[in-house]
Amino acid sequence: MGRVNAFAPNDPSDADDRSDAPDPSDPLAAFMALRTPEGAALLDGLRSYDPAQELTTATRLRRTHPASLVSAALGQARLRQRAVAKFGAEDAYRMFFTPNGVEQATRTSVATHRAQRFVAAGGVRSVADLCCGIGGDAIALARAGIFVLAVDRDPLTAEVARANAAALGLDGLIEVRCADVTEIDTSPYDAVFVDPARRGGRGRIFDPEAYSPPLSWATGAALEAPRAALKIAPGIPHEAIPAQAEAEWISDGGDVKEAVLWFGEGFAAGSYRATVLPARATLWSGTPLPAPPVGPVGRYLYEPDGAVIRAHLVADIVARCDGRLVDETIAYVTSDQPYDSPYTAGYEITDRMPFNMKKLKALLRERKVGVLTVKKRGSAVEPEELRRRMKLQGPNAATVFLTRVAGAPTMLIGHPLTGPA
Image 1 (cartoon, helix red, strand yellow):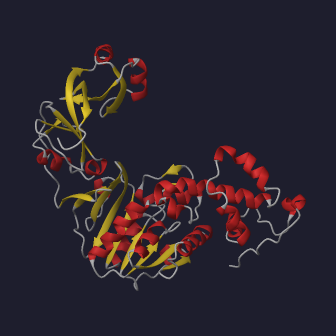
Image 2 (cartoon, rainbow, N blue to C red):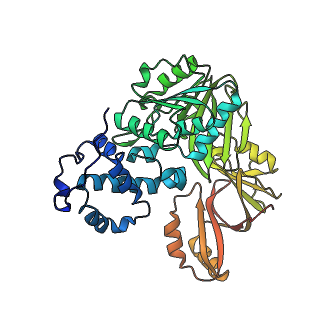
Image 3 (tube, one colour):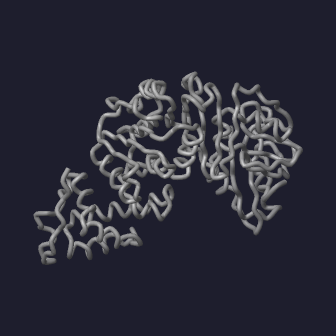
């Protein structure tokens, strides 16, 4: 695939009419134009531009550059700004992205954790990364010293992945191939990683067999490899998890980001794992845990991390804090004992009352609460609506939990534990 020729200097008056300007209807041509010296310089100059001033910026740049190139550069600059949250500024402002690529790419912290698990499994020197997208996982694997074959069937996405490998100095460890992943011979590689597309024209896809490629194909490819990992949506039902897989749910900064199915040597088939980043803390169970006990609300309330809940490991938290659930259907753990853990957020409960808006409003007014955090499980009340009705005033803060206790709608009021209890 040849590169677009570097644009020659031209009179500003005919910048929009240059014959070598990229075709705005061809995304690949527009992207390749950004890789030319003129495109690269234009993009570098937009690192700190303000999207609110886009019209002014575009008007100024179009005096000396083709409108289509300016549009491509501004679009890429916006994507880079969005990507900082996932990749960090140092990498994001050197990398290239597509709108879907930013949305679907694995954030660096999660990709690095997965690469480290491959390394820890032993003997993984090469990985076939199928459905590589813009290359987020390939980059983490290469930085762990692993050679990567990165495959994507979309020509633009594959070209972006190739550009990212070069931009980060990893092109010696990453080979990018534009191909249908179902036609790739993975036998020469020590491991396989598959990240099926889970979005379609109508948004998220929840049926694993509607992934592209389907989960059944990805599982088959994984079982043929010495070791493998499949990235899947964290909401996958446990009954859809293959018996040969170790299932891991990963959260980062309190948000569940993904689930991974691990296959082969070094991984425990049939087990469940919850990993909490950035603490790199992991809960693990080789068998389903028994239902935890249910009992009265104690002095402390613990909110398990979403990865712990998804992995069905709340009973482990109950045992660790010598606690119980407030309701058999609600993942709030209560205890009379202080407990500090990366797997939970802890609160001291000061008040408990049946659900009643007027009584809550009176209590908050009495306590001079002006800042209210609303958390809910098992309640249909919208937090913003509740805050609006409370008409908060005062210098103090509080947290209210809208939930069920022994089946009854209940409000628990308290405050976060700021450190080890």
